[in-house]
Length: 277
Length: 116
Image (cartoon, rainbow over all chains, first blue to last red; front, side):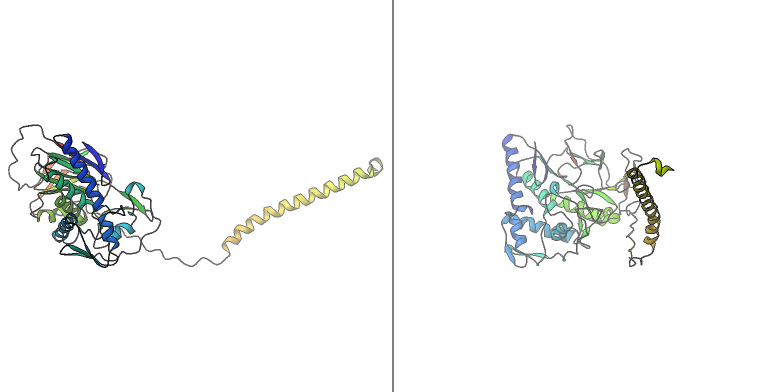
């Protein structure tokens, strides 16, 4: 079953229509909560309250706790606080509605946010972008709730199907690698998708928190296998941003089972743990 | 002699048309001469202020990743500017993951992942 949610195509493998409907409703509910493009979402309310502490719902707290943990595990390279930079670099509306920018943006303020009990506090000028974390986290919820055996949203896949193989695709749609995932998750982070131009130069949506600019990296896309789709999403993004050292870093992280990168020249590399066909 | 044969209005017409032709020719020559002057004049005014163009940051992308501790699996090697769709090389340099997993009893489930 395929449907559209969170600005991407969602695929769920489920046993019956009721389970499919539960999956669809779950995606819609969390999109309403986590979208930065919907003014009525809880995330938009949090962003508007930057500068002071804001109480959050249980689900939002779980997502933010996951994001906080992943920020630490990736040494700060995966930070949902880069929303202001994402916005300033032109990704300030849904991708289909985006236009190129003539000029380079001013530097965004350093991203700072923290959890304090059931509240989140953003410094003034900080904006959260849950992006891929929300997609992966929702795939995790749909599968862990038993609605689906496999849930895939925009390249983030969560599975309890021991036979699951994921085809990692090239830019042109050809298969770069077939990865044995089984029970677990795989996510791909790509800078060749969602591209536009700023000042005549190509830009993309993967912001490096160290520079608050689109990441400069030899990695076109990175795929990571982990226990959960949220983990895999963060791992893939960190490998992409780390660039030349990405695979070496992934190898040192026990929570990353496999890592594969599509290199800028079309080569495909993996760490030795990669189980590829 | 000619004046005797032509009526005065006719002579006046000839004079008027001759004068008009001379004026038109003079204007044409003046215009033709003015064009090169204008071009020459373009070099004349003071040059624009010097604009310092900062050299663009040139980033050399590494040809291969840093070797992971457990080794690097090369699934495809295409050391060129453009991505090649076909597999060129497939070789395993190091593998620390041991034997493969048990074969699944049924045909594997497949999904695709290309990022978002």
